[in-house]
Length: 410
Image 1 (cartoon, one colour):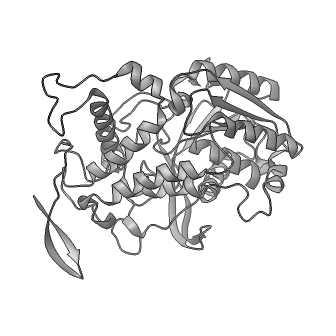
Image 2 (cartoon, rainbow, N blue to C red; image 1 turned 180 degrees about the vertical axis):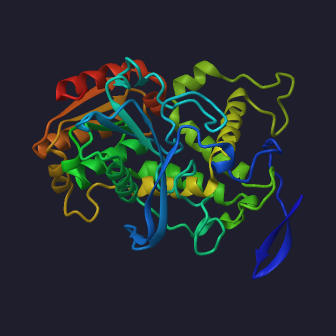
Image 3 (cartoon, rainbow, N blue to C red; image 1 turned 30 degrees about the vertical axis):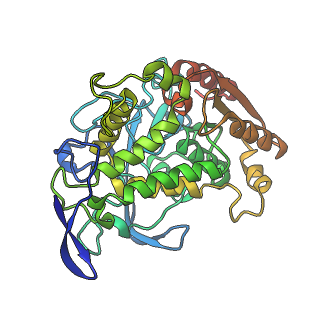
């Protein structure tokens, strides 16, 4: 098969290399949400319109719209609001069912809801799709007002701090002066920590889960492999793929990036117990691309992500995670944490987490205490690796509910 690409300013036909993975031919070029799918539970607020929003890099955006969802009722005093921050491929749909506008169920169902740790009968729960995301907030798949076309690769690099500044403007719009708690895991936990450093007077407590004070060399290494694999997909077209027909977008690239990540999200024990050395077809073993069951599992999750996520957003947010470092341009880590130390903190580890290993959350606890704050630490015993921050909702809920009760949250 051949595709058209610009080479030295001229449009030329390029033959695609052989690819051993076969993905469905109806996968859209981008899995980004569009208004044609319906709004669902989303709300939208323009946080920037015509005024340059200066990013940490110095680049600017003239227009930013943020998509967010809410559950529960805000109290008259606006003192029962909890901000939930999502991880890399999450979105604002933290709680709820699958519907035409929301292709996946709430990613923290069981932790959010009536009589759950994040009780929607008592609290006003808010989750914002991050800046640079692809499920309603301004990101690479959004239309650039200057060109009338998707930003694509022209969307500037962002940081966790840029994301949090946009969330603050959503809080302003909702009339929330202070969050009762800000909670999230993985990349969500990075946002929680930045809320504590950047806006300590606007949070009453923080719960950064399965996260880190700074991205480690190994975390950056895994990210780099995934991003490189994605960018090498010929159908990625250097990020200019939005006009491609279904089946002709960078599905393979984003699927392989997801496979790399998915391998790090679960533990070796889970893979061994679930798949072992089982083959998809026991009669087919000597072909170079005959698949083991674990390969089929990775291909499934890769295609699933390609249907609901945007490749450019994946690169952008993945890079934002690599740039995460609380101490960057702040003199020292202790100086940054002295701002967090004004409020109670709870952190939590997953016993089998190899991507964000428990020592990182233990380091967080010790650093907050050294800076003069209070931080409680818990370990969740789970075989599910890093993904357990999404799966072990019962166990996490026990610790989170106890923490919120202790700090006086609703």
